[in-house]
Length: 421
Image 1 (cartoon, one colour):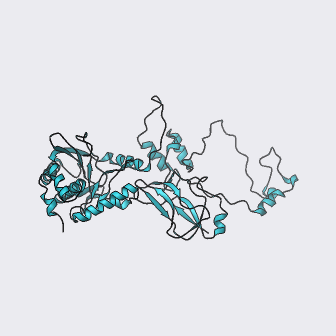
Image 2 (spheres, helix red, strand yellow; image 1 turned 135 degrees about the horizontal axis):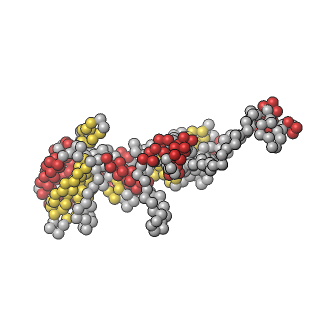
Image 3 (cartoon, one colour; image 1 turned 60 degrees about the vertical axis):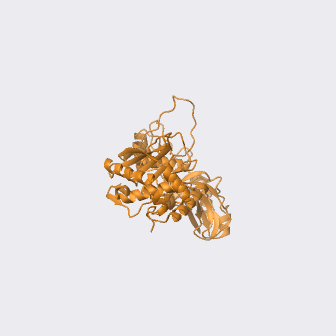
């Protein structure tokens, strides 16, 4: 008996995972809860754990391939003999490749081989044999077909496409090899239609020579998330404030400027709950606490660790949480619960002195994000607030920046512990 190992679903937005390594080889014993493989998601590298004791067996999905969630990537056999008899391996298997079909039973092979020669159909006939003669059902001769180029059965990473999906792609003049498979590992009509309605890639053939490089999974996820914000009707509003007072107060309190800015934003959001709302098709989602998402550059992409309840929790707790989160980001071991679900976002590029001003995109699930640039020669820093106009209006944004400015210019609240229980 074999138990399936599937690509886990680690977040609501995860569609595929990249198998980065197998920790075990075919035939190795595994224990329940033991990490048998590593998977790279859009934010981190995580372990795939065994759900039962047994022995790893193939076919195993190939390393360094993107595999749809819930798709089988390997098996665990309950007996060592069953595992050793399977020759599948990560080097030869491909994701989505089903186990080899069982061989024809020996009895059937012997029966076919012992069919008397005088009862075999002539070599030039396709319908001379009958069930009584050959032991197999009769197959009618194929009808003559017009001379057309029959399309090959296309696939993506070894995954099949339904006949209707292939016909639809052909009618829409769409290269089905560029269509992503559905959750079950097969390309259906829905995936073809989604690909046809999606923005088309630029035609690069007339430009310089180029090669295609597959983006890492984090960068691909950022691209998907940014595309999802296209329907957000946003507006921008800016102010300039002196950051030196907050910087000095944070240093005196033993806190980072990022944490101090996060606290200032969280307290200001708490004063105006509209900035803690989100627009949904059912109505406004009103949050009961302020969860701050703070943009961090990983070198390979952008990630936003979340400081939970950032307006009310003690600053020492938040500082320790931030230290842990940054450690997880550095090691590539951050989990979905660490970076999803923020209600307000902060993006600080102040470490780059050349950046005088920039605009940030409102993430899905929030109504605003604050972009902080570097201090200018006059000592003032540009703060640009991007807002979802379905939730926040111009006057709301102006009042928000007004209150935030006062907090930054007089950071006595930082030493006094404003907002702490």
